Image (cartoon, rainbow, N blue to C red; front, top):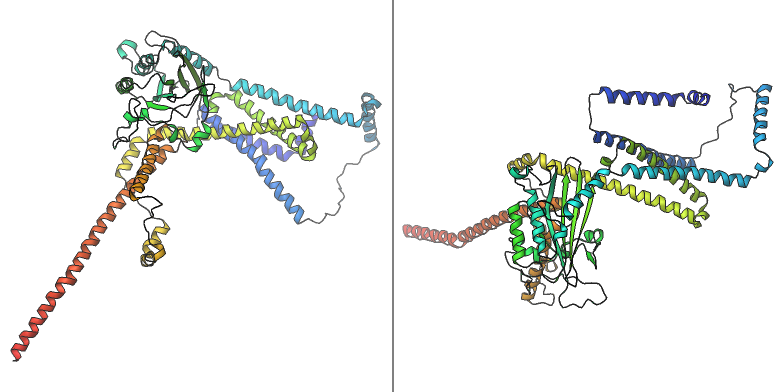
Length: 593
């Protein structure tokens, strides 16, 4: 207690500042009149902690770096030595008390304790033991507090629900052949989301109104290449473009984009993915006999309503979408539990072996989008302590390797460095995930709440079409631009590129077709969240370009009409004036005569 009292007396300014900050924070929290939700309070606390950590890790680092550079480049003169007039005068009594404490220490630390290298090694071991003990203890606590029992029970119940047969729906185990898949789709994934209220008492879902389906159900099948010998190698899957009923050769119709629901199930999805998507989602699903890539196959989407979904199912069933050449069928859909804020990602795999057998499996993954939703007050405290200990651990590793680089050869030092790097990667990934999820939820909330306001604003607003600086210069100095365009080396000419006119036209049409196909399949791309905004932006740009072309067309028409009027005036009206002038001259001559 005396040590704490002495510390307070020596650091009275720091103590007063801390007390004032605590009192102000308490008064603001209690008497401000704001009542935040639990999740909002967690977010505020996390933000305060993050700002504080960044203040000490980043700001102080920059501050001391600037101070060290200033001291190194512009060294200050050494201050003169001043005698402290208020220094404590030690007496014989102080000396004797200090001597007593020294002798008491000698009773414990005998001569055999004076091995300095051994004592130093023991000191380092004790420090490391304390540091690693705290770290792994808090890591275990972090794993325990981040574990959500609701996710476990939700996964377990959903697996039982879709795997086994129920009173009003079939399970995955009932699929014994490929065409049995359609009965499972109707009874388990389509009909339960439009239940009869009079019979079931449910409005949204057959098994409870707390869960709803997000989006639509996706069917994706992978087909083995025809006339391909498998042997001992891996199976190669088909990526050819087919006509309906898997007919070849493929011919693109003029109305393919308009009736894309008809032609979509027969076109591969791999060419539509971006490079980033192929890098991030280029993994495989492991089946019973082989593995199946995620980004390959042929996809069809069901609809939101029961009737439209059954139309799609009847269409692909009548057109033999599933055949003997089908290797596997994936059924992907997502459920959302409103009460528990849990997303359930379900993947059903129906695998057809080379022997004709059907092997079915079900993968259920439950998740909460925001990490803070899985943590309570105790969880936030554990995370805070874990980050503090992680900073201490990182400081210890960096300082040790900075002053003793030779220790990097040690396997334990390498292990410490790997642990530190993995922690940093996890923290960065969690932060990025939280940012992305927060932006997604904000967009969804804005789209739901402000839908009608935005639609009315978009309907009534007058679009402003801006030009950039180069377009301004193009119009402002149009005579100069036209002068340069008339020069021989600036004229645009036709380039054959070693092709005929017909081949060039076919090449441009094929390029345009590939681009349209890629744009058409953007709905299936797994790229970032800005895809919808990009599509909307492209539509708006196309509309502005269309309006600009119409304006240019009217301007060209007016220009041609003006040119025709000018030619009419120059060619015909000047002759009429000349004739009138000659008649007047002849009349005047006649009068003179």
